[in-house]
Image (cartoon, rainbow, N blue to C red; front, side):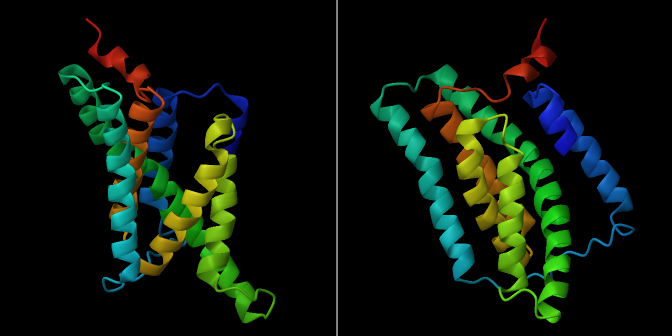
Length: 198
């Protein structure tokens, strides 16, 4: 994935294909890779905070679009479709970022803590390392590197402490889809229109 990110011209369609293939491999060979999902924790303050933040960050671009008179029937439908498609796109990203990368880093940092090398909790250490890698994987989108790193930390820490990947996926999908489309006037799935061409 790192080689693909740095050596090839990226677009959403090739991202879909490359990430989906990686997810399929990890799904079938995950047990051999030592993947073990965290035990799901009870609903806590973390869940409420993430839900509130997601709602605010999802609604804000829509308010901006309304104030800017950008909303019409066609754009409303497009934005809605993007949000739905983004759920799958977010899933394949977070399956790799959390279900694989964060868990591997968690296992590594836990060993370091046992030996006394690492003073931070394994969850925080793994989330920090995940955030750096997640940010670097967005290097072809320079304006997203820092925000991807910050959000990568939040999502990684949330997943490692709650075990709820579906919440991370939905949060990312709704925030990213509305922000890209209304703030940046960007349809992130423009390449996928090839499938609707006559």
